[in-house]
Image (cartoon, rainbow, N blue to C red; front, side):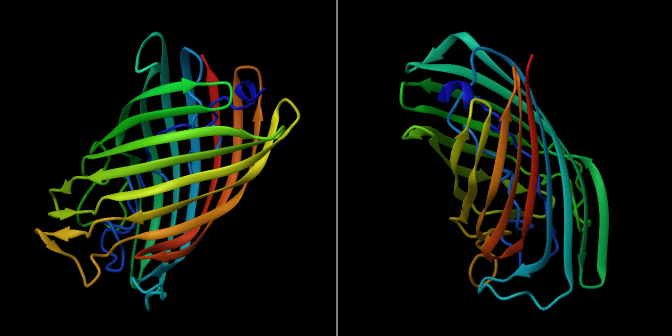
Length: 301
């Protein structure tokens, strides 16, 4: 039942939250990440059966406070709203693999529409974000499903150094991950996904965002054969200082960190599925602290 219920309603994609490149309190360049934390919280470790799959991810992030390295609100007027729509293709082989796992590959491309206000400045922009390609291996067992892989993000998105908001981040990045889905008793299942993101330099600004790590999690109750309800969230932390022209930025390297939590609800149809969820951020440092809402779809081709 777990395998049927836990089809990968949400797996990996990369969308861009290039928030406020000129906001001086932000960690990483702009306080966002090439990896969209909060995405993979249902069937995180479940790779689907061999075949072709199409995903559509829609998210909305809003914040009206920018946290400094001490956690205090930055003393400036601030507001940001970002809508992201990402189309993702996933293929799973019926014959290729290694180490006992099944090979999968993905391509994902987001469209971003955002506006930002920082002090007297404001900016609105929409456009194509950064393309992500990836490879993964999936393993299935009687009591556990797991997946590991790497996603490469390419600087294909719309970007201009003088803009306050950009759909692209103008940098290369790699995200390595390991994800696990396991049952707890008769009706519960647990999900964990561990991420490590290695950031390249933005050559337009000579700014290198620090490498990041994080964990996404959920605990879900199966409500019959098709419905799933639970709690979800993430921990996201920057491991290495931001650097500008080779030098550490600010007294603390502008290291980002944040936590988030919220409810989620999923429905599995015949060859399709939908997930709705919300995440509230707390204890942010060097980033905008806000709320995310998600509506995610998948369809087996």
